Length: 379
Ligand SMILES: *Cc1c(COP(=O)(O)O)cnc(C)c1O
Image (cartoon, rainbow, N blue to C red; front, side, top):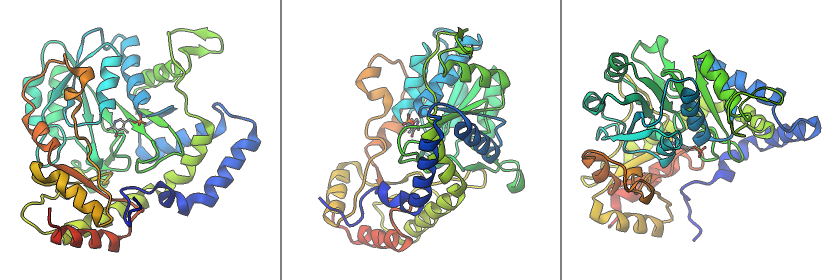
C-alpha cells in the first residue's frame, strides 16, 4: 500500500545530502583506501569533538559497539563471567544481546512511566553482590541520566555504559545549560549506532564507541581489529568489527547537520503536542529541566485493546505507524530462562505504545495534519 505519510522514507531523509554523499563516495572509491585510513580517522575526530568524549572508535554497528565495550572490560579484568549488568526492561534487544554475548548476566529493571526509561528509584534494590555495571539506554532519544543513577553507581563501584544508539545530540542539563553534556560523554563508555534509520544514519551499518578511558579505548580498538596491537601480533582473541571508510565518508557529510536534524524532529514533536487532544491518547512528555530528547521516536499510548484498530485506521488514512517495541527483550524466546522481578510498567506499556512518523520524511504541517486525523479517528 502506498501511504501518503509512510512511517519512514529514508530516500527522502537523505535527498538533501545526495550530491554531497555521491561526491564523498567518489572520493573514497578513487582513494584506494577501503579499510581504515584518513576517512575513518577524520570521522572519529569529528565525533569526539562533537560529543566531548576524548576517544571515539568507529566500529561496524551499534550492537558491536556495546559488545566491544563489555568484552574490553572483560579483557581488562573489570568484568568477569556471570557478573550482573542492570539494564532497562524497555529497550531494543541489542542492549541485552551485548550483555549476554560477553558472558554476563542481564538484569532487567522496570521503567518510569513518564520517561519510558529506566526507573532509577528501583536501581538500589536491583544491586546484588554480583552487580558490576549499569547499561542505561537513552530510548526514543531521551537522555536517561540523573543524580540517583550516578549515586548508586558510585556507591557500589559500578561502571555505567550508555546505549546511545537513539540519542546522539541529546544533552543532560543537570549542571546548567552552559555546562550541558552530550549523551555518549556522560558515563564510562557509550555505544552509538548509525543504522540508516537513526538520527544520523549511514548508508548501511555503522557504529562507534565513545569513552574518556584511554585503556578501554585502546582495548576496544584492538578487539575490533582481530585483537591485534600491531600488525600480525594478537594480544586478544578479537573480532573484525571495523567501520568502513565508505560509511565514515557518508557520516562525515551528515554529522555536521545533526543539531539541525534534531531541531527538525523537535519541531514535529511540538506540532504533535500542540495538535493531538483526546482523552484516550497519551502523549510523550516534552523535555524536562534535566534531560532533553532528540525525538528518535515519537511514541504515544492508546488503550491496549484498541491499538490494532488504531494502527489499521491510521493506515486507511494513509499514515504509517510502528511499535517500538511490541515484545520486550525479557519476553523474547531467546531469554525465556532469564531471571527477573516484576516488570509491570514495561509489560503494560508494550501493549499501548505506537510510534508516529517523525523526522524530515514529513513536514511540520504534515505532523499537524496527522495530529488532526488522530483527533477525529474512529478506532
Ligand atoms: C539500533 C539500536 C541498537 C543497535 O544498533 P545497530 O547499529 O542496529 O546494531 C542498540 N540499541 C538501541 C537502543 C538501538 O535503537
